[in-house]
Length: 186
Image (cartoon, rainbow, N blue to C red; front, side):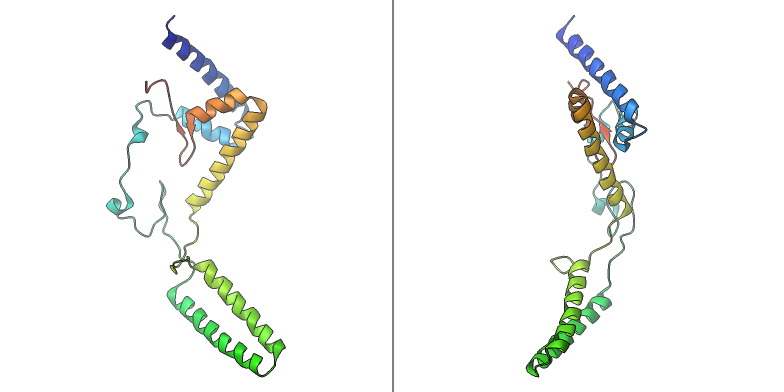
């Protein structure tokens, strides 16, 4: 038996062991379902390695990235930010006037409103001053999938470290999960 056949035989034994472990966990762990989906929908020709067209080439400005495109919803509009900033300027002048007259209690009440406006403006704008958008559903799904992946790895590490290493070598988590077949590339 050649070295390549021995490696392929060992690889198949590891694959069968990993698939059996994943099959046993697929009812309880989302990561196991995603990993099995990656295996059963794998592309033997490696076409997933090709770079897709850029967003500019497709004309997707203003939409979320990824396979599913969603229109991004801004957290605020320019008019609301303008009104918040105007109110903050007036509050600064009123706070200064109350402090000059010795009215600490009224100045504190206005200071609380001013801090709330500052917090709101910081929440809805980027450090550069652009208006933020609400997180797209796809982003939340991606985060849930990655959390499921890391939980799957922690479970595999505690139960069967060899399966964990096999999964790390052969699955590329993301949107979607991809199966990386190391034996067909060499």
